[in-house]
Image (cartoon, rainbow, N blue to C red):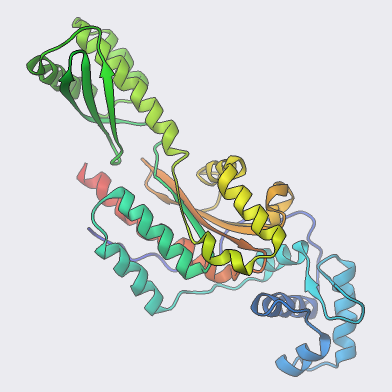
Length: 360
């Protein structure tokens, strides 16, 4: 298989929240340092430590005044009297949308990820498992990857195998690599030679057609068996397409749960197990209206179920077939690293899928 070198990494293009204030350069510098320090060590960040550790060239009193402005803007807060400051959800959003700098993965990490794909068998499910493990370990977060799916399934190949009586095993291959195996119950028993001829007819009639096109094509055919099997093939294509949207590979939640507080852990379990919010996010991520990589910080005010968590989401694939991938963690996640990991793995997966379609 060919692994295409990903293009240069760049910051994600995201719609900026409308409630972000305008800050001075110094205020942005102080906010950025508070966020980064709190991500590194989740303890309140004080003005003296900022001056001592980063040589800001101003006094602690000046930094405290600027921190007061940031607090008034709702970007940081003091968890205790006379304590340092901690970023708010709004503060994280400001950091991600306006202050986050490009963070490239090291050459060692890129080689490690690429090497894992090179060792993986040429198998779609194995690629999914490789991708989700690489994402989780690189971003140090829980990771998820969906199977690629087309906006509409397209027929590629059919086999019909007699089993017992009226029961027939149908093996349906769709463009993009999806394979569906189902036991069909026909109206009456059919010998294997007739089933093989019927499959051959359908393979000639239905190549590259969508489910509804298969239905229309076979309904017009004079042979009742071709018509009957054509309806079952079309139903299977629709079912496969719907199932692909729900097939999510997950990895890494158990490793990061010990680092979560109770609220974060409960939300992470709920989001990954219940599926409603996750389905909506992944479906939205696949939309061409969305950027290739985006960050959802504390639910962005839209998803209360993510109010204590952040997600970095992206998509991969070709014009014919796309999948979604991403990482989930607390709002203290290392955003730059997570974005780079999502983008790098997405580009590798896109190259693999492009190979599949060129060979189809």
